[in-house]
Length: 316
Length: 275
Image (cartoon, rainbow over the protein chains, first blue to last red):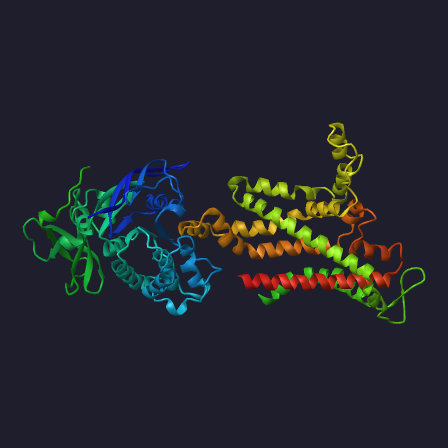
């Protein structure tokens, strides 16, 4: 795979705090790459450094074989989908989509505009103003406006967070389809682990301005390198300093070998399965994922066990 | 809620009625009466005050007033926009710069105009300094001309242009400017393609706030323009004072008001079309 975007020990120091510290990353051409982390972890600042809205305090940014960290935003072949979409309110959908082509004239501009409007299904609304569009439509216009310029990398700053939850899953699927269809490299910033797991080819988990771990969603979920990554992606039980996923814990009425006894605290029905919270006799509370058909009463004594192979251990 | 709104609006509405609507009505009535022998007005009704305005003499005064007001408005916006932009991008110093813009209001406009006279007159500071430096031999005619009036208008009304434009720029979503740069627009293109169009309402408000008082000004033209530069404001003032022709002064006022209101609506319209 060819690397299209590379960050080398990228840092950003603000007057009051260090937002990004020694971040190194390589993103493959055509990948869907996510920067995942809680708010304030430096993921948005990293994105803004790549876009050129912030100047790095140290390190390098290489795009398509060119060092770009000293270039102004208008010279970088990356485009951004802003969290608020930042559509120009005085221009129509068409005016917004055509905005960037004025600065990068292309012979096939008309055709590209038409194609991208079709791709985001906004052809019939191209003469509307942003104020006349729904949240989902605005998001699609923001995508079209950026994609029409055929960027080397499309930067997306939490583009789903402004949408209501029902719409989010649908738009998520559309986004993934659009990325596959266009083949453009997506760098997606999110704090939503479910979103990152569902969309990404690779994820970098950030914490306190640094990359905690980068890898495929499977690697991060199954082989988290730190406690933070283990907790941030999916749910995690901690028993005697060892991590165990709820779906790896078995629950039974009878005492089996190596099982711990406990009492059911409460159950949460989740449709296809349920989460059973159990207080172990030894003290810890664990959550067990069980089939929805398992019927347990609150206060009932049960035995939980797991395969030691599923245990996750971390250096202290 | 409606009642609360009514209560809140009443004092201002009452004040407007008493100080603007009623006097405007009185002026309207005066303008269709005859002049009294010693000022004041007398019956019978007449439209002669308006027909007298057709005289080219008054046409000239109207045209000169409109031209000066238009020039003052254009200059105030040309100077005010960059200043407003500068202040809006000044971070923590915003409030300092804003108070500097407002600072002149703490001194009477009349006193500030006298200060300008002191600077501009033949024996004023500028001419004295230039002469003593040997740059000029004869004093430059800086005072008592259209240029001096224009200077006074721009000086006096510049804050009225800066403030509404600043108010819009300050609220402008910064991510729109970033988005424009992100889409390849250089700083100058960001300014012309995003900032300026989005500022149109502020510029429209600035234009009205400068143009209307400039059109009706009489102190500035009186002090800085001398007797040569008569504007509508001076014409009105003269009719009510020395000429003792109240009905004609009233008629000129009414025409001035109509012109101002018409222009205001035109600017509004244009502003709404832009957005």
